[in-house]
Length: 247
Ligand SMILES: CC(=O)[C@@H](O)[C@H](O)COP(=O)(O)O
Ligand SMILES: NCC(=O)COP(=O)(O)O
Image 1 (cartoon, rainbow, N blue to C red):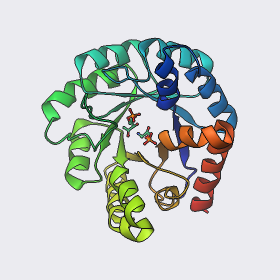
Image 2: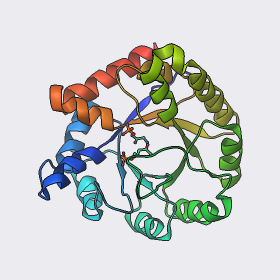
Image 3: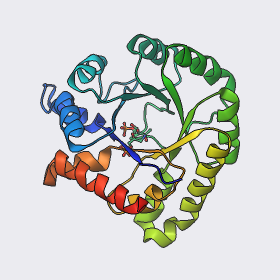
């Protein structure tokens, strides 16, 4: 299965820089426009409970700025569910959140939180959002995602990225194997696997080469790289590397 791999660009950290001074620049809406022009297949935004970056007013503004489908990342809370049901994004990805975390630290424990997550998945499905669960590449989590009726899982690549920093491809190889097995397991269960967190120019290739994976969501690295080469160039290079990995 080597269909075209989609790239979702997460623009959270444009808002991080904007919020650093409390003003309106840089504007996440402009980032969404540039991402669309650079060939992104979607925009991912994470409306955190603490609103540290993306804020409520950004949702409609980003929708107005681009024709691209929006993937709204959200915690498994009543507040976020109501916001998502009103906003009706193309996709809603339920992610774990701890207020004191610097960034997402792992996958959502859908196995342990089944009863809390099931009604949220149902409400989001009813609102027409394609529901995704951000989980570890773990067979138990994938089995429960199937029970929950989620059409998509996004496999957390954070551990893979950390291992790559520590020791390159060799050190990350065991986690890459977990990702490969998880992607194949998801497909066998009729679930579309995505992947994301911590992906960079250097480490994206082996994950992009996993044939069952349909979409990568990449943000922090792209926004950081944009400081040096521009957002358009950063996205185009990531797109090139993803396509190269799929050849
Ligand atoms: C779930 C995930 O890995 C990211 O999409 C998430 O947005 C990370 O949180 P921050 O963007 O706040 O770093
Ligand atoms: N779900 C992953 C995502 O949207 C972006 O994660 P990162 O590239 O900012 O680590």
